[in-house]
Image (cartoon, rainbow, N blue to C red; front, side, top):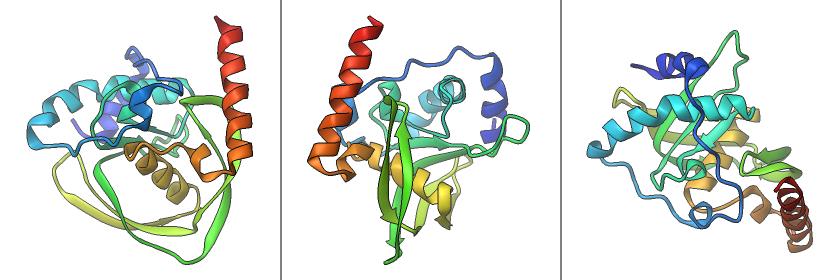
Length: 182
């Protein structure tokens, strides 16, 4: 199966549970994916896509569903025109000197948003499901999303890019909302 097949199968799959901060795995550096990890990754992809779409979100890293491996999903397409990307062992090769602000949120910090300043564009390299290496320049929303997901693989949350005051306000608000849901 390819990325599009997993994405399409997500419509009828049970979504994997998304972990909410401050779960410890969200702060750990994910281990690089090895060839022997691929069968279990393929087994879980449909549930990961299902969780991302149901949230709804445009990106989801493996640690967010409790898997400590370096891979993530991104899909900026609408339901009628999905554009799924599975990035295995992604890495940023270069960053632009120009910075750009984008409002970011995170499925592991539900209903919390803030403006984050990141490099305007990056060159990223990752392995695709078919085993090929892909290297591409990305900017705009896709560039921001990919940087956000790679941060997750390094144990970094978007709030870590904010001032300590803004970060603690968001984390307190999240804790209060999570307590109210119980």
